[in-house]
Length: 397
Image 1 (spheres, rainbow, N blue to C red):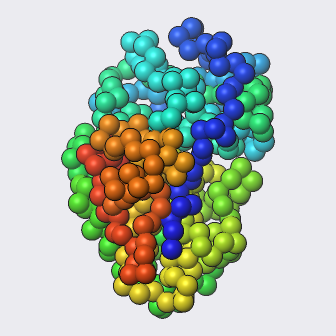
Image 2: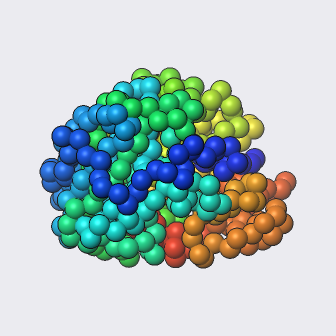
């Protein structure tokens, strides 16, 4: 039972550098069309929980990238902890985030610094999907938000992900979070049953036990969970998240309330009964988007006999914790190629299988499970800097 493909993995060597890498303007004058989207401070509807008022979402605004293939999104910050930009294209273009400029005019984030780097902070810079989601700040070492206007530059690209595609309509939503507590956090989750699965009593019982274990793992890192179960008519044969499966994810988005992380539970992922789960993006959006879901295949989690043992339930819970960990901004501390790592200082930069398993094998975000005939090693460890990323996710209350 291996978790090697449980999270969205992208090998750096598979990403071609953009041809304009040396010339893309970052510190020059902002390229803004006539429809600048500014955070309007509309409270996200997250049920009766009053604490949800800490999260505010703008109305979704349709913008066009014009002849440059780029546009600037302006977010007004006033005593906010974090911000998120969610951008969805017309369905053909690929979308990425290029830069962030703070109220003083300083560029605090540039795609060039991370695109070909062996350390990873966000998937938002890669023009792989028809939408993107970006959270700022990401890490404890990133500068805290200051009052004023932040400018996030968005680019649109052709299917190859490197050639600019101009004149693309993009739907933009901005979200801010005013919760200043970085010690305790809470994430809202909608667990969505694929068609008919909510009638499987053994599966429901195993899932509830797995969620309890997930809650225990996250509580140790200062994170709480609110979980709501939802039924659906979605086909239990779930697809792998990609540029061509956005319609399903939009359907899942409609079943989750704004502010919730949708987790789809099906039978298989990509017709693979060994695929445990995949997150739609790092980080994931908390408003409607073709990136907005995590897919989990219960057959893989139940093991070869299809019956949940206690060890299977534990692993199932850690799969939930791992995949939603991706969704709130965490990467694997090391990829299975042993040449790419997260950008956190307290996850060791190991370089081979033995060394990585010794140093990081119990970390929740390790890319695969270490198993023998007696079962799999439990993965429950989250470092201080991993916890800091989770606390800075805009969907964390």
